[in-house]
Amino acid sequence: MITEDRKRRLIEAMGEADLDVLVAYGNAWQGDYMRYVADFGVLEGQAIAVARRDGDITLYLDSPLEVERARVEAPALDVVYAPDLIPEVEKVMERAGNARIGAGPYKLLPRRLASRSKDLRLSDETRFIDKLLMNKLKSEVDAVRNACRLADEGYEVFKNAARPGRRDYELIAEIEAFYRSRGVDDNFMIIGVGGPEVRGMAPPSGKIMKKGDLVTTELTPCVDGYYAQICRTLVLGEPSAEQLAAFAIYKEAMEAGIATVRAGVLSSDVAKAENDVFRKHDLGIYVTNEYTRVRGHGVGLFADTKPQILEDIHLPLEAGMTLIVHPNTYNPNVGYMVLGDVVAVTETGHELFTRTPRELIRVPVQ
Image (cartoon, rainbow, N blue to C red; front, side):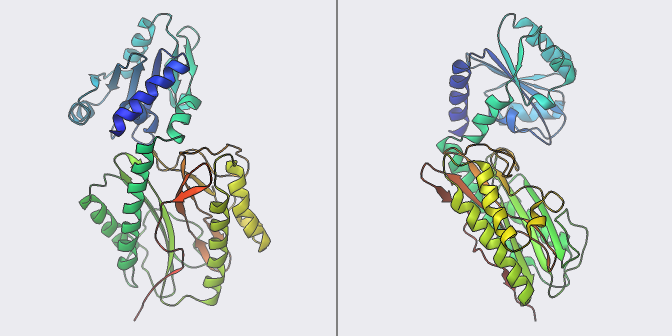
């Protein structure tokens, strides 16, 4: 079972790092650190999981509703209702005596706890947890693979739902209904509709689709706690010559990035392979942060996690990492375009999880 696999690995890693206690913070936005430790995702309020090297894990929650849910969904945990969450966990740390305590993500740790790092013998162990999150066990990789299957199936629903006269939120509604009916409890999704005036993707705004529009989306379904993502662009009706020419650049860039992925390669090498394609076509300005954010990122217990695929992040890729390569950016001739596939890093290369064709998808219009 994936939860037991993670717990065994966590306890072994704490022993190797000489950590007696590990404190993991989580909230409704970012809960992957805490979820790795406690296998519980927070929907309301804040939570702190405290893991000890002997395998005991206690989850402190400041919401009574979350306490009730945790006791049903995570019966193996010691769940504590702590309306004064920070002072209560502070007392737990004080009682640890001379034990070595680590915490992560340190940047989100409540200031009251972080400010006492010296007398509590508290160290920043964000990188320690990051390594566990990025370098996945086989069961975790299988979970991402399963989520990718739902991402592909969801995109098929999205494609069939897109047509002139519909509003963008109507597509979102169909996707959500599809995913919820298949047990997907979360799906991060953004969308773009239009032409050169569209410079990115966002939540739906009620925009009405029309013939000739590009419709872009990221679908990010969560299955058993693990996210996968797919990025695709479709056109309503027959694509123009400009749209086809632009899309060919994105496809070349994504395939150049994916071809670079293997254990030992730096994340910056993958980004450079993508960006060099745009530079070759005199579009280098559009891979800067003025027009785009990243050239890809990790997927797992969070929708957008490490490693970040950027030219200034030189993180060695390791077997077991799962990531999406996506050269999503603005094109001055046609507008914002996206294309992205999920891969797992292997010793000799990569395993491709996404199956939806890499093409500018055409939706027939009467």
